[in-house]
Image (cartoon, rainbow, N blue to C red; front, side, top):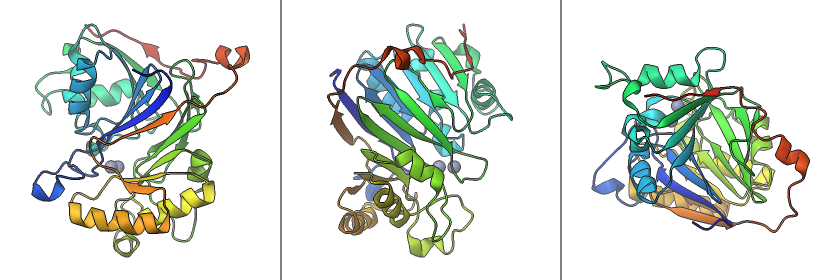
Length: 304
Ligand SMILES: [Zn+2]
Ligand SMILES: [Zn+2]
């Protein structure tokens, strides 16, 4: 693995529910899972059905430490978790993070409530990996690994959702999913997170026309993503969290329209990879290094 690259790989880009069929081959049918390699560190965002192939391939590639961040725990963002095979390997460490249920449910409670009978054949206790669970509050700045800084904020979604800005090597990549915008307004939380970002993954479930009928569903549009990126000086916009009924041909039309409006836009597809070389920066100061891990308040635990 190249330690001088910030690599983003899409393992699942579909919202709501996985889909399969001839009309979904080009953009893919797995629900949300995004890998970020920050030099030697492997971060994952959400464990939708894309987490199954992600886990298999990354484990085969020798990755043995994962930080897995949840935006929230609607099914399309967690359904792949029981099939994320690194969880069952005793030589692997997986640290899970969430903040959308702060004060209501811990990350450990959220994961263990989901992975248990009668919804799944076995409980989390069968997992042999060293599993850590971390809790945070929206607005916290996380330092999961040396050199990686993650800023967080609340998005506008039923039940809550966390937006992330991941900084490493002078680069910034943001995950803004799921969120609903108010017509005619730019969400100041989103704007702050995506300021000058190299890449923004944005919830583009609907078009502006569809949005008229979908108010209150908690999602947004590619047109709003373009407005936000332009206002924040972000360079690239990944249209993702595609509506499950959106066919390849329809997505290609959306992609073309979005690129005409904002040249940095593209419709994300399963398996797609983007790479951002580390920018030449001066060495981090001792003060910045000393703040590492300072905001994480959870504990590691082993499940045997
Ligand atoms: Zn979703
Ligand atoms: Zn959701």
